[in-house]
Length: 250
Image (cartoon, rainbow, N blue to C red; front, side, top):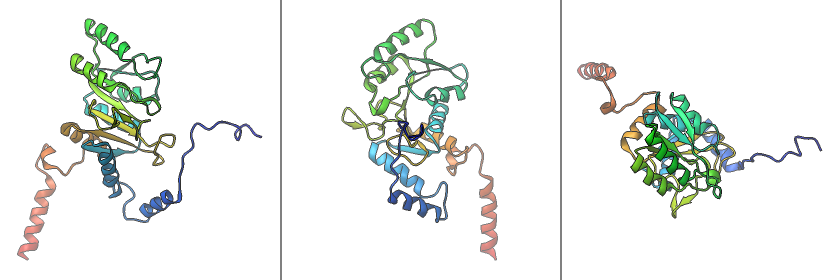
């Protein structure tokens, strides 16, 4: 037996004929990207989790990145996460120019330790080095103690970005992970080694309307049809009105 065939696989996706047929249907349609399947997929996530808004992107790495941008993470800010995760949980803050530090894990759950977090926050407040955002990560689908982390966020004034890349389908306190009850934003991954795969992909979820507006703009390169979000009068509307006038008079 060769070395490759004898290796224990890191992960193995389950792609069935229904999945293949669905992909072929999209490939034969008029839309390859940003078509009607995207909002349908996003709605299925909000319907399941109970959250208000969801924005699908090409990867959970991108989802984490735009989530940090929406939360206003930038140069001079500090973001804390767990050392037991994929590098994207920290890189998303580095992309924004922020500093990253780590909170120790609980020896039983391997998730972020609430005890260690509280101790670190107490010291950070003394040193005027409190984090702007905390990124707890649900390891292998097991939720962090989000209620306790949320309680600390009120005392120490930080935002919570829930990295639930491993945890779609999981529950916390008998409610779906991803409902953002104890966080500002939640992110799921659809990488092939995750619970559900779309070959690649991620999604950013929130209940906050202002954050949803920002996430949508970051996802769409700042492009919007919502005139309330525009900083100038749309140039296209003037041209459209003139064309309509010409068509009407002629």
